[in-house]
Length: 186
Ligand code: SF4
Ligand code: SF4
Image (cartoon, rainbow, N blue to C red; front, side):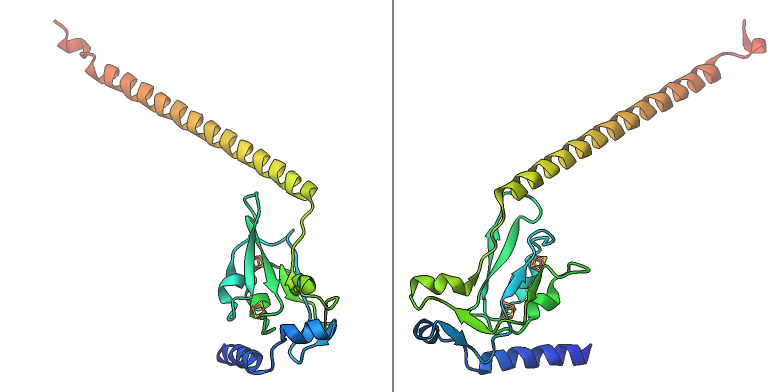
C-alpha cells in the first residue's frame, strides 16, 4: 500500500517537473513529441459510470466532464492533453471492471495538429457519442424506471392487503373474546 502511494506520488512529481508540451512547439512542429507523452486517453463511454473520480483526482485539472442527457453515465471525462502530465492517476482510480473506462493508450507519442491554432482542439480527447446510443440508453432508462415504479406499486398493494387481512383477523379475535360464555348469559 505504502509502496503504491509512493509510486503514485513519484509519478505525479515526475510529470510536473518534466518539460510539459508547449502549445507553441506543437503549432510550429505539427507532429510534436513530448518527453512525457504516454499516449492519448481512451474513454469508454459505454462502461463509464460518470462517477467523477478521474476528474477529482487529476492533479492538474486536465479533465472536464461532458454532461450527457441520460442518468448513467450523466457525464463522461474529456481530457486536455496540453495540460495533462500523463501521471495515469485517472486510469488507476477508475472503478470499472474488468476494463477501465479511461486509460492511457500508450503507443502513439505524437501530438498531431496541422500547424494552426484552430487545430489545437486536437489536444482535447473528445468523447463523441452517437445520438442513437443516447436514444437507446434513454429508452432503457425509461423502461427500467417504469418497471421499478410497477414493482413498488405492487409491493405497496401487497403490504396494504396484508395490513387489511391482519386488521380483519384482529377484529374477528376481538369479537370472539367479547362474546359472553354460556354460563354467563342471563
Ligand atoms: S493522466 Fe489523467 S490524472 Fe494524470 S494529468 Fe492526465 S488526465 Fe490528469
Ligand atoms: S472514466 Fe472511470 S473514473 Fe472517470 S467518470 Fe467514468 S467511471 Fe468514473
